[in-house]
Each structure stands twice: as structure tokens, then as C-alpha cells.
Image (cartoon, rainbow, N blue to C red):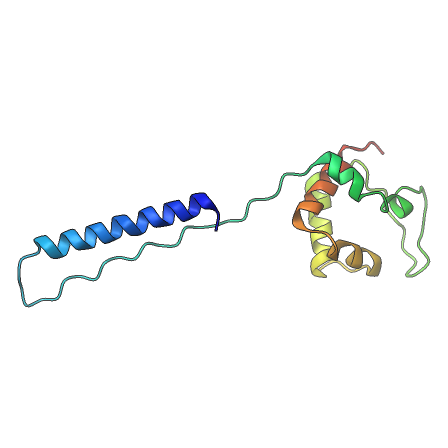
Length: 134
């Protein structure tokens, strides 16, 4: 949990504790049980998409040029046309690498390559390649 979320969670719990304590102090004595305190809903934590670094992406794509940088290249096994990826949309490139990493897209070499990348690496690679001219 990041520091701002820890602070927000602590404040929410403190506020709930104070409210529950105030209710028990001021509630009139009755035979009915006091309503249960409402628990705070967990904060929605949507992981942020990493922002790509062009400089780091350039370092990570050095080996990519061996296949994707050669016009008309076809790899030997399996025999696929290897696309030029420079200038593609960063979103497309990030999605493609993520799909290879998860196994949703199939190509033996690309699956292995993508599995070695973190989400930040993928964002960096996509940022660099999207800026290249074909």
C-alpha cells in the first residue's frame, strides 16, 4: 500500500471509531441493540498504467532490431513475416507485448521475450518504438 493510501485508510478508520464512540455515548438506553457501525469500503485501487521512458525503451529494444529492423525478414521457425514495428501506436505495442507475455498472442520467440519484461519495461519499449519513423 502506498503512503497516501495508508494515511487515508488510517483517517477513515479514526473517523469511524469516533462516530461509533459518539453514538454509544449519546444513545439512550433501550432494549434494542445499537446498529452495527458501517465498515469503510476499501479504496478502489486501480493500478496506474506506467508512463513510458523513451530513453530506457531504446536500451531495451536493442535485440528487437535483429528481427524487426530488417526489411522483409522472415524467421526460420516458424516461418512468419516479421513486421516492422517502428512508428506503431504506443497503445498497440503495449497491448501486443502484454498479450504475448500472458500467452494470449502466440509466437514462441515473442512470448519468451515478453515474459522477461515488467509492465514498466513494456511501457518504455512502446514509448520508444512509437516515436520511430518507418
